[in-house]
Image 1 (spheres, helix red, strand yellow):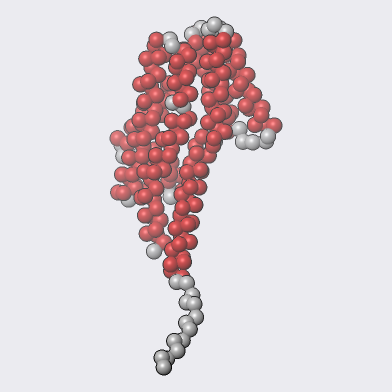
Image 2 (cartoon, rainbow, N blue to C red):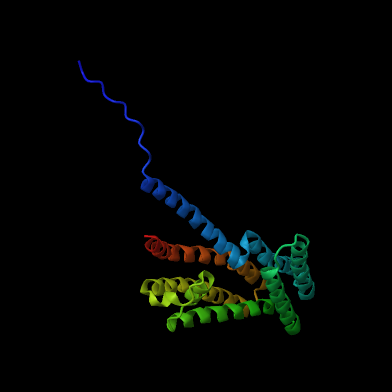
Length: 237
């Protein structure tokens, strides 16, 4: 007669394994949230993408419909920008990026009207790209990548990242993404500007605007995430 096997009570789950699973789940949610925050803080979320492209789209459409009437096209673009500002005010939403965009639109419209040249409505934006691209490039050359400075400010770590070779390298690598972004806009749009292809440049400006900015933000996150995650894990051990 075989001995009756004792019935084992269920073992409690391994706290380390459980904690590991919770940590992985937390990391996954945190990673997704990080991408969302990067979009939200950089460009105002999906609504920011739409708001930024609308005035340019209205300008291009009005320019075509009115048989290249610059004054009417500028007025239409300004009305579109003003409508966005008013809508945000009605909804009691933050105006930071929208207000900055409207000021930029007003400057561009003034410059184009002053020179009576429709293509000049794009010139302030092109100069802005030149300025940002040059700033990022110079920061990499002098080994103070702007992305590292920005991340240090946002995380409250200041310039501690400069003492870490891995962080210096990854911030420099990610900063190159923005150098490519800003100068690629110039490379593509400058010939269009010089040729006076207003409609084509308007379409290109929209495509290479915040959609491309969003892509750069995403790849910046992908470049930074592995190193930042390993640093965070090392601190938690």
